[in-house]
Length: 163
Image (cartoon, rainbow, N blue to C red; front, side, top):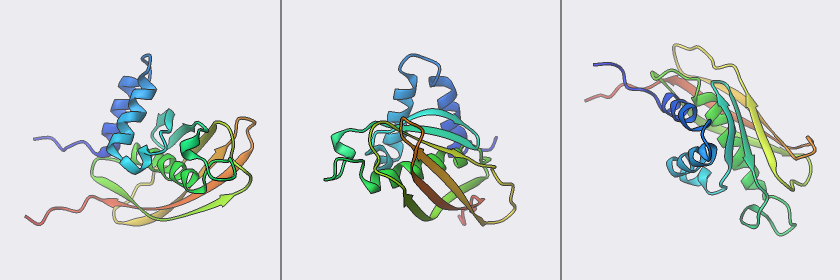
């Protein structure tokens, strides 16, 4: 029997099937939000995805705003974690996994309007667990960086069951 496909491989395969059809990016993003409910709470839309690269859009609307009429800090952190996570996971082999172990944010200016988060990373090769840090840049429609996410991920082989 062949090896089961990993989460990243399944996400990437689904993206490749849906992204080119009308409404496919929206459908993909809703399915991703269903799989990862908390990340789905901001209703971001994946606009580009390949191993080691993700671009995710977040529309400015009341449900993600704070009392200052800008996008809430935690919505931005959620966007940064989602973007770094899918960029990394879609490049990992099925025999591996990634777990978020730390996150920090720099908030550089008020976040208003439609935002796009982007993460570019080299997917590491490894034989044992190790930590890597990825950066997600979040920009407004003018191209200004409004926030920068730094996500520390532990990557390593999927632990074997002890059945």
